[in-house]
Amino acid sequence: MDGATPPWFPAWCIQFSEPISDPRLTAAMLLENRNDNRWLLLGYPTAASERQLWATWLALRERVFTEKMVSNSLDGEFLRLIAGTHQMSVAFKRAGIQTGEDKAWLVRIPEWESDSEDIKLPYYDGKHDDNAFELMSWLEAELLPQRPIPTTNTLDRLEIEYEQNESLDIERLLLTNTATVDID
Image (cartoon, rainbow, N blue to C red; front, side, top):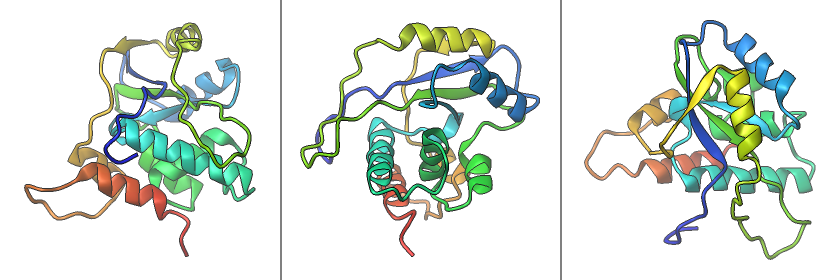
C-alpha cells in the first residue's frame, strides 16, 4: 500500500451529544442495534489513517482465513489489532471508547472476497450509510466531517513508544504495530 492512495475506509467520525459516562453502556447500545458484527466503535484518537485501517482489515482477513483469531468476533479482533495486543482487556482500554470522550469512530469492517492470492481493497459504495446514520441516532451522536489523521495522541493512546523528532512517521509506527502484534 506504500505510495498508493487507498480507498475510503467505512469509518465515520461521530460526536456524542454528551461525553461518554459509561463506555460499556454505549458499546451495549451499539451491539443491541447493529445488524451484524462488522460494526464497532473505536476511541477517537486510535483511527489515524486510511492505510492503518486497511492494514488492520488485511491482518484481520488473514487471521480469519488461517483460523488464528484471538477474539471470538470480527469486531473484537479488529479492535485488538488496532491496539497491538494479545489481551482483549488491554485492547478495549487502548482502542475502545473511554469515559469522558465526546468523539469516536463508528467503523464497518468491509466484507472480503474468498481466500485468493489477488487481494483487492473494496471501494466503498455508500450502501451502509443509512445503517451508519441509524446507529448514530441510537448512540445519540452526529456525523463530524473529518477523516482519520495520524497524531502523537494516537501513539500515546495505543501506548506505542516513540522519540519526539521532526521526521516522526506516525503512520509507519502504526502499521508496524499492527503487523507485529502476533509475533512471539
